[in-house]
Length: 109
Image (cartoon, rainbow, N blue to C red; front, top):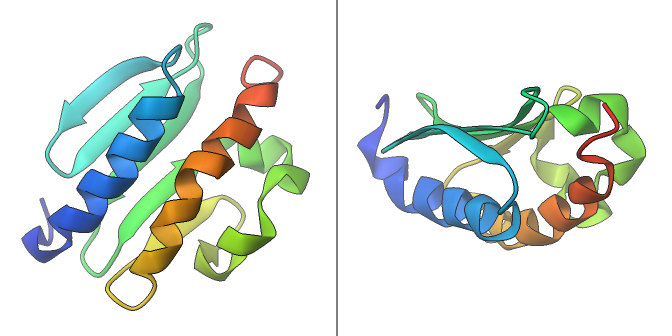
């Protein structure tokens, strides 16, 4: 784990993903690193503590960028990376609705 101070944000983000994406297969679930794939074995999501942020990576957003919620866009860095830190941790509450929206295309990418 690169930054233990971000563990509370990681826990909140990882729990939000696991609670909604119940049909996803958990590949890794260690403190600071959650990786999930869809039923076909394609990567679905990763929630990982980095040096200065918690990164949430949703592969379906790469193929379906229109699914990105406007409320979570301030955390977007690049095409599919959502960065959360102490300054924008309030945006973590939008992860669950974002996962719900992504699940509509879970097996289409």
